[in-house]
Image 1 (spheres, rainbow, N blue to C red):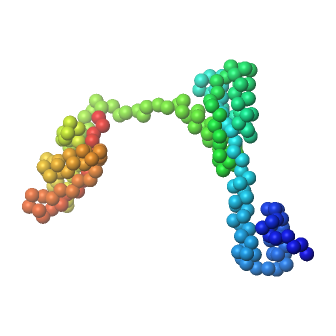
Image 2: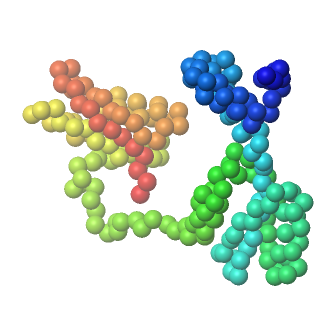
Image 3: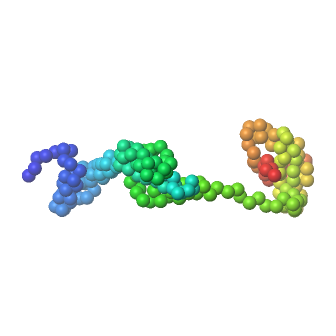
Length: 207
């Protein structure tokens, strides 16, 4: 029987040791606990993941972008020279890709290339036509505070209608929050007689 210590074995040797013990009927949890084999395998896998070195190459048009991956930085730099010499293609600087990311393989590169292509398809979101004034239709009200157009809304409380004008205490509350850097928030207003509470919201209008 071998007298080699478990810690001195290679990863493959450690796995064979564990399998041998399990084959002889030893309890699985006991073997795992005594050898720490799961943690050892995980550590070894992380250690063995090698970094990749990638560069981005421009294609036939400025919107075509491709990723080239290499095992060494030197190979990546040579690829940059080759792209310039053989096709006059522009390339990015070489970027080191951590092994834990490189291990994702094609799944990573496919998504990365989609992101590169999407960066050339940026567009503004269509803004609804402002010709029709909907300020009254949507039930919101407006007030100016600190040179900002504030949109605000208070909900009725049962049969009690919310104030049509923004109470002074609410204006002071909004002003204080704007000075603190906020651009929207909640409103909580009490009626003049103190018996009814109205809740709502406010925001700096972007129109």
